[in-house]
Length: 300
Image (cartoon, rainbow, N blue to C red):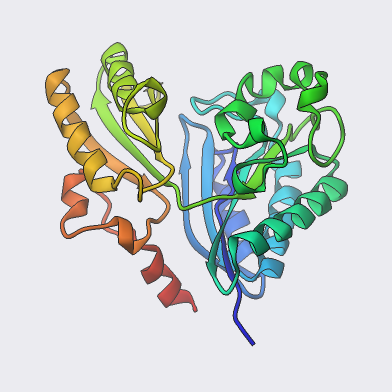
């Protein structure tokens, strides 16, 4: 009998209520067969990221717990943060790790989306490998207009959800859910008011502006830190390696006369994306494990 292991990285639109978020981590840790590998929260983004691993059944139980918690603690009508979002559980990506193919994971995601939509009366849009409509493959296209524009957007026939009601949940909005490849989320911080230069840096890196393949990048202002942030999603480290991205960032920051303070990785990265000394190259300050396989080894 093969052991099936999925990773799920739900992103929640709550990054400031740390006591409540810590309570959720405790609830998730009590679910049999579910492993909380990593957790981070950011007040400026007003967002938290959970890295979960387990059997499909355990992942579904974990997401049920997350939605139940979100109903008590998140109301998007009062939510403001730097990060784009359409939902309280904004995105729920699934990554096959062991004993399950991409095709099998996609089939699981369809049933999961249907169950969550019915139980919590929330619209769910399938994206990436799970997308039933080509225009929904890209998460940024689903998020365009954010929560504030979602009700109007969903009045268009082409933006009816794949599962769930035809209008956003009043408190929870909607969710993008789907099977995808490993995604590496990396942030770089800069002192003071240099937002235009950081936005120029982001534009030079992202694929949509002619930069590196599989790179999405934004320049953001973080009020609580009084700093600028380069926020990067590397959606396929096999197309553009993290090392190549790091090298290009170094070249571009020098060209733009920007001096980064430090960097951060959100969540975990596959061992194949790392290299000796990657922590120093990425200007990481945290002294923790960043490698997915190591985290899995300590849990399973």
